[in-house]
Image (cartoon, rainbow, N blue to C red; front, side):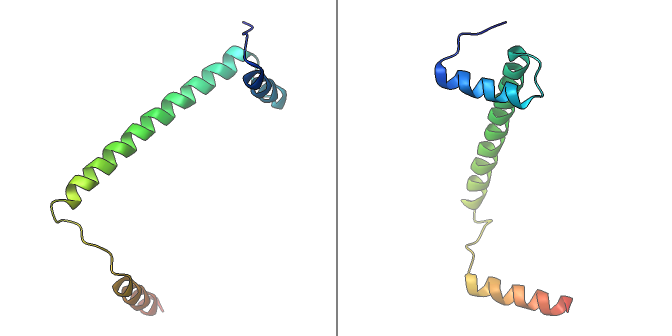
Length: 82
């Protein structure tokens, strides 16, 4: 089904159709909406994970990274791997 896209969107759709892989605008739009829904779902998961980790850090289960300690431990592990 043909759509009345704004000029900028029309150029993007035409470019995707020209590259191939889509047999119709409907197929292209379906893929775009599915990809957007997946992006939204993943973004919600990441936000939940961030909130969870922030809550955990407030409980004293996390500690700040001390760069010098990190470097010392990294060097020790590298030397052990030899």
